Length: 498
Image 1 (cartoon, one colour):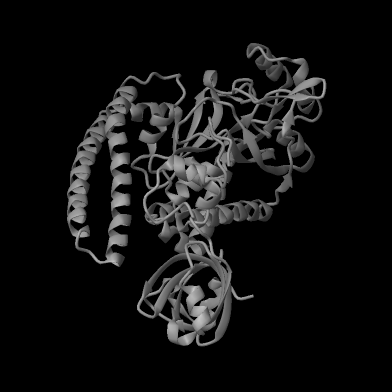
Image 2 (image 1 turned 180 degrees about the vertical axis):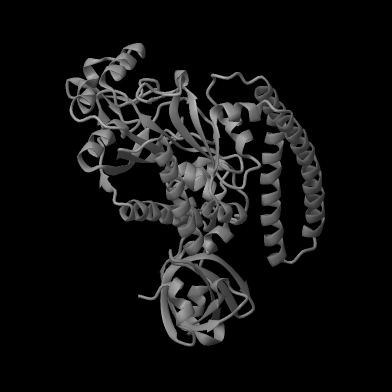
């Protein structure tokens, strides 16, 4: 069966395509149909003179998302998407879809989320999911090349990994179980058997948060490595991300262009060493006068951009009244983009003064919040690795810095352009006695961690690991404004369907 992504190699040949009507418009004696088949979109032209009278009548009844089979001549056409056009010679209608709810007009976010099962068919969502697929493929490829073993951690757990995050609790026969918030502890056990392993699975967190950075169900990639220290771990995280970005740039340029994603930052991230700074240096950056000046300049630029967009929108509204149908579609799409951008700008205008105050009053010893991560990365052209955090805000299993016991050998990779944390990890504490003390200090059930303590009783070694959030990585690489678009069926606070 021929697919649309093969057409460029089949010019001047007769082919058969099966797919769905993405968009269509009719002119005198002609039907212009954008046909999608999952691999791409192709303009198909049905001329009344080229098909039977019965087929023409049937073709004029087609509507958005009708399923069809077209046979015709594949020809070059630089004006069409993909550079090819199908001149239809015969057709079969599999189903005429009536009343498809997601029309070309603008729809609100909640409406689109209620119809997520259909929204996935849109060009934008198609592009995001193709990039997500490539990111997953690149992650597996990188770890395979580096000699890692892919292992699986359980989804049901009897105790939390960190003891701090709100958990989803469920009945487990006559006992209680929790949906996993991390496969890390199990990953450490598997690393003691295989040296270098990674897990790739769903993670669940019941935090009652509605920010653009949070989902209640998401996917984590968690490598664990025996005989690694924090510096080796930072280098591994950097190498992984650079390998992923290179694969996306090499194979998904078309999808990135659909999203309007600028490639400059991705190219810099793929080829240039990441920025590195200690937590203390990051705090100094937040509290600096330079940061305050940057925020003042950002606020002024947002007001200017909003005024320019309002002016453009007014001009488009005037033009729309006398515009032809094809131009009206273009105007409507551009106005939708303008309104979405204005909404983002207005959110920034509300947030920037709050961010400025928070940064100026930030106290050493606090953990970074989302706005702090945004400020640290908003003007960067590549990711930043922040390391050596205050131990008081990190998990019990993280090893302390031998040079300063107040610090944990922890690291976060913050994506540029304000996206914030996409990787969190650390060197793990390998001492049995120290780990027991930490479990007690965090008021955790020591008995529940006896199996974990066995890893320190029998052949303990220095080791480290991290977790990479798949949806956050997809969101940054695609340039999305919310994680809900980075996963096929997002699970958010208050949303369990579809």
